[in-house]
Length: 229
Image (cartoon, rainbow, N blue to C red; front, top):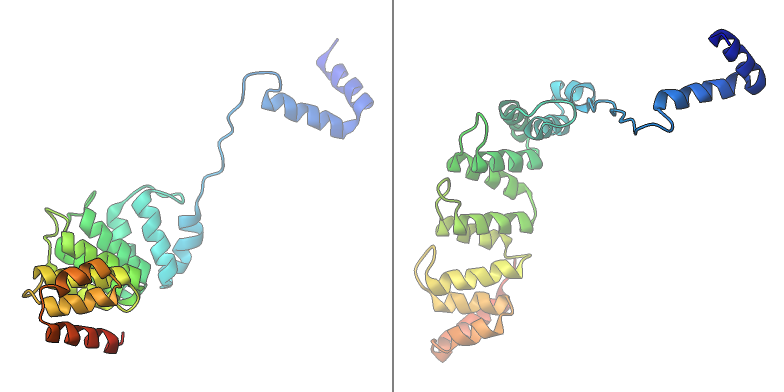
């Protein structure tokens, strides 16, 4: 029977809607091997982020930086472009872009040499705007360093622990350890005891307090009682 006549009779029996459904199933390969259909390309970088980024929107510039850094949202990975967009957003004071730029310099990658000085510069600018946890993270990074890109800097680490101390008992305990060990400055067990008391670290406080005269312990306790973030 001619194919045309088959279509006419089928349409007569099932109606046009059912015929279209049958055609769709045939195209998808019903009863055959699985057909993989490619999803539409995610083109947000150029269709959504780029127009706003070119107008100076810091959030959109940050999104463009992310897209180029990870090769997402419809663009290929390009660290030069990522750095450029992160820099534009970071210069506008966008905290996440400052952290992203600092981390790129810390790690290094395609077309971007690792640079400890630039990493600390941008991470510090981000931490200044961020939370106590951001400052604590930076203090820990500076305390340990990231060889060979970033050497440990105990003095800088202590300063960032001090800036995190108001909200972080971990930072307060670390300050006690720094003064006890003389990291970032001379050994000062009286200051170490003050910070251990503020951190509620009884074991550390007892150990250091045993080395001090009663008058020194009394001063340390008073300093802890009077301390205000």
